[in-house]
Image (cartoon, rainbow, N blue to C red):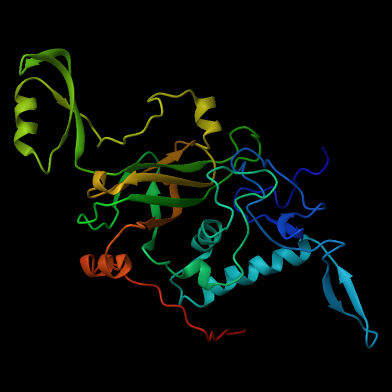
Length: 347
């Protein structure tokens, strides 16, 4: 219909804000707020929602006539709420949070996490308080990875983890935002760069294969998965018997290995923003890691892909103070301290 999101909100590098209101106690999309999907390269639009009111629950403005109010509504009221939160993240973090990281943090903090994007509400609703964006909840911790990668290069990022945690399930939820160049002449190949994230719950677990197969313990074996850190002798044995070690650790992913370009696009391969969640049993997690693969459509030697990745790890059954445990085990981690008073220089 005619309520699909349009320019300037339909942009791959911006933050598109929709408006919600309330009905019978539930938060719903305001009827005037446009819906997705967005253009190729950022199909998940709007990015997030803030309160914009409606006829039944309007925003009350002060009238220039004494004793009167003006009821109003609109995304024009929702957008400044989000801009205020983004500005506070940048300003109150002493420069530790830049605009791209702030964008990723806001998306990461939305309240309607269901694992799927909706054209009605985007990624979800912005929290009311900045503490809900920056504070780590009990039994969880949040990490920020950011930087630049040359196109077609891989980078490995360890995920700080306490290997003594063995009970229950552990949630790994991440949001990645990319600042990309665009090709305004191509509506299909609109974004010039992106990143692909691969999660490895055990960075030491590899698959060894032998196409012909080898008789081991009386059985024909063609493949085996081995934790090379816990069982290095088994690795040596398999290699000496003609097995080949995988180039990357085992992902434990059920997705098929090779996808067409259309399938990859449907899975947001070239999108500048993505959020995912994976749940694993704690006993199967050991030295977890991310592999980030920078993608570029243009063959430019100087094409660097700028990204910000936010990761929240939650272990409800952890018996210790997870946040403190991770800080003690990984002293290189630097907590971001927010300041309540910000001095702004006006030139």
